Length: 275
Ligand SMILES: NC(=O)c1ccc[n+]([C@@H]2O[C@H](COP(=O)([O-])OP(=O)(O)OC[C@H]3O[C@@H](n4cnc5c(N)ncnc54)[C@H](OP(=O)(O)O)[C@@H]3O)[C@@H](O)[C@H]2O)c1
Image (cartoon, rainbow, N blue to C red):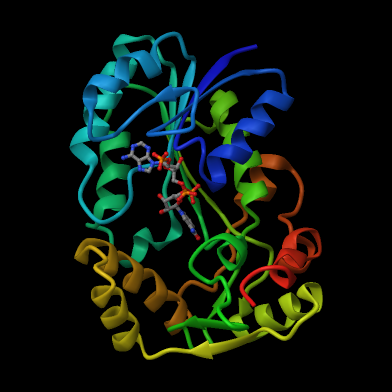
């Protein structure tokens, strides 16, 4: 059995990945600024060595998409190589195709040019964005500037299982693996499924994209993040992000979890929160 470092291991993907790896008998070291096994901050290179010492592989969740963090990633990869780390897996996103020169695209390039074997994992939008992140309903309304664009939402649990496999199996080295749910749904369709499992009516409201950006700006959101978010949401709105990626099936040998299947497992939480 091996030991893996999960940078961002207290987050949505990292915490589920830790469970999968522990369940398979591996050692896990969770790293984040607070609440993990080891304190790690992307902005403090002095925290890299202790986190990476003695681990076989590292899973990397970056510090966000507002500013270019590829220099920090380059530094981390050099430390990893000198500590004998054998593999690095980067959590990227499918939206890279809509903003190739953004922070996430640069991180992918830095990883591929780095000193240790790598895998890039590019998920589609998470189903859990409706329960834990940007699409959580407010007063029963899911507000997003996506019109009738469809998205093949992926269950974060599937992302974590794929991450565990590519982290522990050399056959996925030096590749980009794209993963999505099995079919694309409009936000109206997603809201109808969630209504069924939440036990209360949830509706989708299309938002004007310029208004969405203005609201983010008014809330003090960094400009780099707004650019990235609008690029991703624009991809959905145009219908360009509706395609299916078969990475779950390729890596795990089973179909990806459907949105309805995920909602049956976790959607009831929306009946209890955000009145
Ligand atoms: N949401 C989606 O639909 C979606 C789809 C595809 C890809 N992604 C990608 O998924 C990634 C986010 O993953 P997630 O949703 O699992 O994360 P998350 O739930 O937002 O959690 C972020 C994690 O990173 C840690 N972190 C934040 N800033 C840090 C810093 N400066 N140094 C060290 N650790 C830091 C946080 O812990 P502390 O705050 O304690 O440090 C936490 O563990 C992003 O790169 C995004 O592009 C998201």
